[in-house]
Figure (cartoon, rainbow over the protein chains, first blue to last red):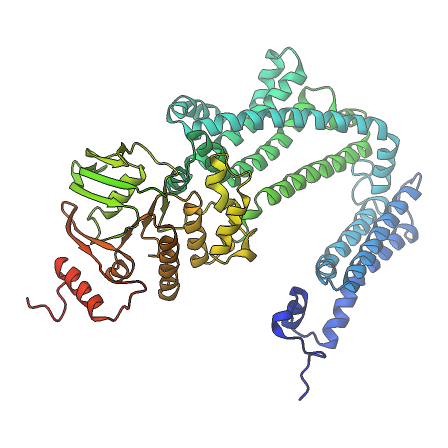
Length: 350
Length: 257
């Protein structure tokens, strides 16, 4: 009697990986081939992008053509490294990494094709008019040429962002937690929030430009105000929604009223507080760009505007990509911290 | 452990209703004495004030009139000398099993040097493999077990059980009954349990307080004179059950109307 498992391991001794392998639906040969094909598809996409760039004749003048090519090769190289990493994991018996890569492969392919289409529409044909919508080679070159000032602007933006954000979040936590806990505090703060809350952050910018002695300070205030508002509301709701049962249990276990706040109310409100922090971050990102474009004389927003006034559209796009990357990284970091702190939530609401 | 004496002297508790003008008289002039070594089951229909007594003893609420004293001292608020277990496990979902059990020690700054006590509690309930799990990953029975030892870690002279097994399935429930009894027999503290299950009350208690509603009051105070573990189908057990059901006006088939 041969079963289809080569060595019969007693069920109790199965590792997680073996169990997953056992329960996985057996794939047919055709499906395996298809998987392999999809897995390698990004390379095809990469080659198409490279061929499109090198073989199709340019419609307009192209300077330093190697920059974009190098960029494409770096992307293809990165995917190759990814392949190697997941193959190493597979060799060690971990299928998750390669499965995830297989899952993402179509998106990577699409990215390469998108690059090719974009290049075709800009540099090769001019369907999107040069230089207003510059081809990527121009953008990369502009980025490289202006790297010092872009770096400086990035730092300025980050400084302003974090200063305003953290000041707002810190104050928001204090007011939110106090108000969530104390009825009297809520009595006085609630009307302020109700009155100020609906005003969009950007409304404050013209006022700030008139009133504030330093534009930087004004911008910090505006960003801080937005974050303060979001975090206050979120932590207030979080704290006042704490199940009364938890307080009773904690009290019978000998918790003091101070401990009720710090050991029960705040941890319980953490998911809601984090939601407020995420919301505050997105409102901060909006506010900082508006502030930099309207008043503050530094930062990526200012750089974009400044480039526009010099008709340096390629630099403008370069800054746009940097902004996109920064905000993505910041949001992802926040998300990672949240997942770490709230890991107890896994399975709670499932 | 020295003897603990809990006295309820003419205790009444009324609640003002929020929506209407009415007042609910949850408890009316209850006088009784309980002491360590006793396992007291309180049984009765809903609204009879059995949970109210427990919450008064815990110090979560204050009596309208009358006085509760523990060893002669009036009860003014909750304290770690009275452990309480609720119908819901109320484990803190953001703490691991270990940290939940250690919560009380930590709140009193006594965790340092008492870590083996926590370990011992985990061993008592056989959840060694779940030490670092979060409550969200536990089954109902496991969670109640953790809640039980969490309230026991201080070795409180009074253990209050507010329908602790009400939400469990029948088999887990019977297991837990024995588990609670085992712990209580070892430590001989004063245990007070609220239940709406007459069988459970008789199976576990050394004394059963039968209560009735409108207003909430004790209508009978029965001593259960049976050795543990008790046989649920013995003649005496059935007699106790019929007696209690009669007192609660749920006359069974063998009671003449």
